[in-house]
Image (cartoon, rainbow, N blue to C red):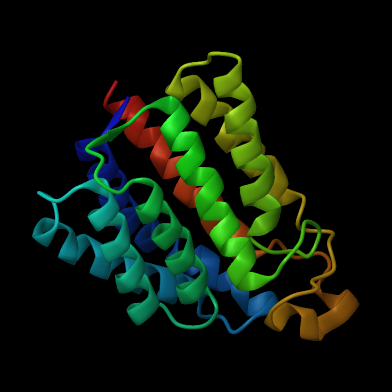
Length: 211
């Protein structure tokens, strides 16, 4: 099981992670985007951390919906709507729940990723966050089907996410501002794929620290 307290710890940890990685994400985005991904993500999850105490006594669905609305209103560029869609879809799956089984977490992640795909219209190989999310969540589902623990499954998820994040480097961007560069977008790691990796890594670290 993943408890509500662990989910709250994860969301708080994201504020710290994005603050620590703000300059790194900005550097990645400067090469192929607007150089604002780091500041946007840091600002958005800082606001999430501020607002979490107001919904900490609510169910997971309400918590995720609050995260979604907060990110949409505070994160600029494409990232706000995309991550907003991720957590909005998660909220529907987690409605009324106080904890998640390993299977429920898998369903939540799968539904959340589909929300991002529907919003961004990206496909695998387009050099976007989808290139991390789809294979990483797929790896989680495979691990749970083999009866791995949540921690074991998340470890494999994050390992896959890190590999696929690095695999965006040679790709030519086909979506977003990076696509304007055409072949010149190759040779740079996608910042959105990187922030997805950081989100999944923080979830694993929360579960490990609390086990």
